[in-house]
Length: 198
Length: 198
Image (cartoon, rainbow over all chains, first blue to last red; front, side, top):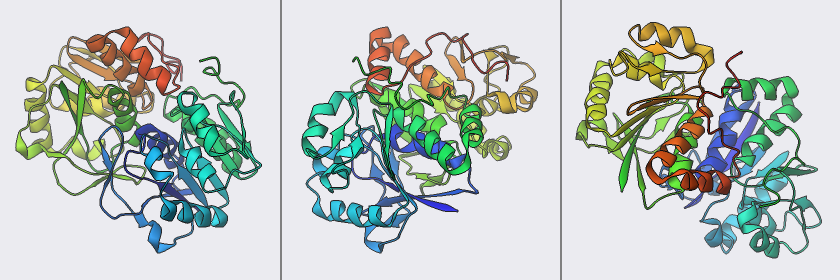
């Protein structure tokens, strides 16, 4: 069983979080999902709906997989030293660290992507890249795997990234099954980025 | 401004709900999203994560658009007469009634799809169809629009269905913008169903 710590903060992006969690949730015998936040009250997304919190960052719980979404709130959280500190420790404890969209800005600000290849969404690319000058930012990528750090580009790319993690842990058939059940046409090639020209 | 009443019940499917809400949430000046449930406590999805509740079914609040997700919990809720009663009244008050995946089973059981064309996901097709014998179930469809009732097939099809509703309300450019921002390749043809042969 692999525990997933899925971070939420005020104004996280709904699909960045719940797209990947849908796919991981197709294999409940392997992945145990926990929503993690600094506060115990439900946390509102950019879109309005609120996620209930399962585990506090202050509990210092270790997770096998971290999932860091993006969203409008990232612009605030990049100054949140307590959260970045938690992220650094949680990432050190984790087997796999993932982000979606501007979630990679938080990984970069925590110093976790220095010297690594990573990506982020197209609409905030230059801003995110400026936050991690020691990172090799990839402008054309559906997602980027560099060792145990896996960063996805914009929003829905997180679904394909999650399927890649499932393939890594359980094999390609398990990823294909999850996509098929969700009637989702997966992009299985991290370099096939239909939005790179945008 | 159009209010969206997004229903949750125990073991709703995460992406059925949050995929469409991500797209509606791209146009916050038009769509105001509320999570609706029978209880005020956060409601757990099939995958585990819990959604906080904004509005109780008992408040008899009217919504312009209803969104009914599917999920493992549908098998229980088809016997929930109180919920089906709420659904009937809320649908009567709404301009547009949508469902994703097995959410159409709840619409069918509430008698809302009698005489209409509708669809559901592939994996539960025959079971859902058996619950609505007076409905013209479409086996090959990404989604089906019959007047103000719009039913999507499995899970991720709800994203395309939501984009169709956005196109209906705000025009195709607004739908295209939402998809592009989310780096999502939309399926804009309701009859283009890559999973029909499954």
